[in-house]
Length: 398
Image 1 (spheres, rainbow, N blue to C red):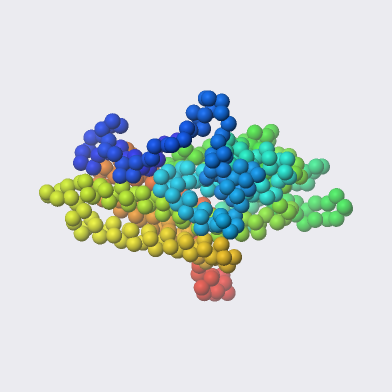
Image 2: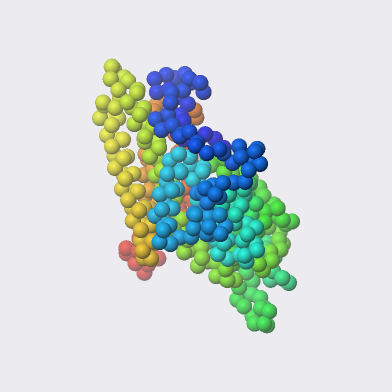
């Protein structure tokens, strides 16, 4: 995994750079106070209790090594804060935590206890990843248009179809995916209608093929298409009710869109802090460039807009914790927070000049990574449509 955003490799005062000649980051990474997992594994020790309930287990019960389920002590606001802090330090780790903190609680909730014990602790302890697979070549924002089929067979289901743009798929042990179940006859002879259904698919199973994509951003995470060819999935690995997954997906979008907003502002705040320090160090015409309003005013505007975006995100997640609707606010967060974050990072690149355009600085990676966040969970156009429907009415907006 690349180094976190905290360590730019170019001096503010020179066009020359080398790993040994770099200036210290204004936000250096703290020295670890505990031995790493790898160090302990060399000594043969088992994971310490603090690690088995760390940031990959938010929302997972302590029984499976997590920090506890969402409730009075652990709220969605807490989860948002954690993901923003992680994204400030390293976006890739934030994205890992975001995925694990979605999949582990989902598997704990719906898998039989024996299967949950096989899958959930490994996610929480960072031993394996379970990816989420919703998008298809012909159905992105229109999730109800998915074409992957699930056919009822003895003891389970056969899945056939393609999922695309699946983050972590090249590295994942399993995939939580969604397919349209055909009409079927239940064990009591009743004809059931089927519908969109959620399945846990082991990615090392026969009938699975993965095709990795070359991407400009998210490089350590990986993205791929996943092809399923008559893949058998037993009934025990059906998550929730047959035909009930669409509501499950839609109910999570408001939360995930809000957390994505926090991750984007975390990255943008890091870019802004690096740039503020740069403007103090970089001198032209005998004084730091921070003294020029053409430099300082855009930074002031970015700081103001980022703070507004953050408080909008707090508002959305606070409504969620209060049990109130927040679809409109989550959609506002998803387009506005990312728009502000991208503009902030872009302005930071311009302020750094030719240094900002170099890949030895983290700003280019930040811009590419946050750009990817705009697409997942619904594009800006989808979010604005949701907001428009909320404030104007669907009968007028369609």
